Image (tube, rainbow, N blue to C red; front, side, top):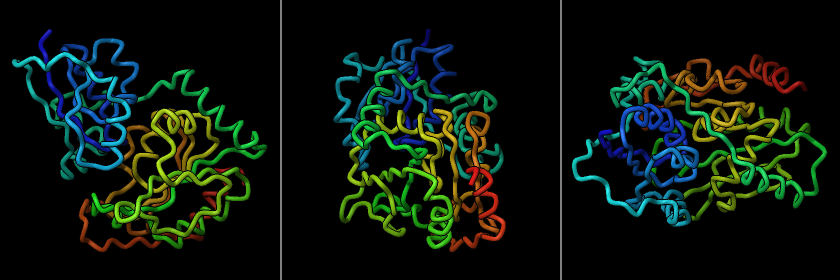
Length: 301
């Protein structure tokens, strides 16, 4: 088999989507993948995938690559390996109808083969069960909540976030039904909350949950409540029911490749925008008279 060296993307959601890229390539090639998220590929490494680390300029990704250093291959990338760079130009996202289809097309792969599902090992589930024990085995259904954040590394977070007041109102409408665990990786000057301080039973806002924790908790959660980003892709990858509240920058179709894997309620602005720009000033107004009943019905409230 010929060797390929895949310069992967750095985001957690992008790496989850990349599973579909890697799976296709592994059918015909010996694959070497550069990634800061080894655990995302835990099942594929056992089938011949080799992982490479060249560090990451991003804070959370660099921390994880260091934590998982032992998972990287000690073998050098073959000098003759063909190089593939994973990306997804906005125009291709619009044309293909999803981020993942655009990613596959940019890599000259079949854009219809979009299976990026992630099996969650029992050892990871044991970690989640231990977390539940530490929280006193809550009687209410479990919600994983993602507060709105912005970060210095990427100026698109602000435009992508939904309207803050609408996000809070939607969350508050169903919050009492759930035992809420709020997750983030906040660091002064690097990443910060822009939404209301969440009303949650458990707040894990300092990156306490590593990827294995997140994947397992998402997989057993009754609901994930989030803005667009990695939680949408992770929810789809592990089959978690989720609410995705959109702002600007992109439309819900960006994540349409995973809709068959998990129940999703997408709440989008009246004038949904797919500019994929950091400076557009998208109209984020949501029709709450329509959104609130849809949300309550979706959650069985």
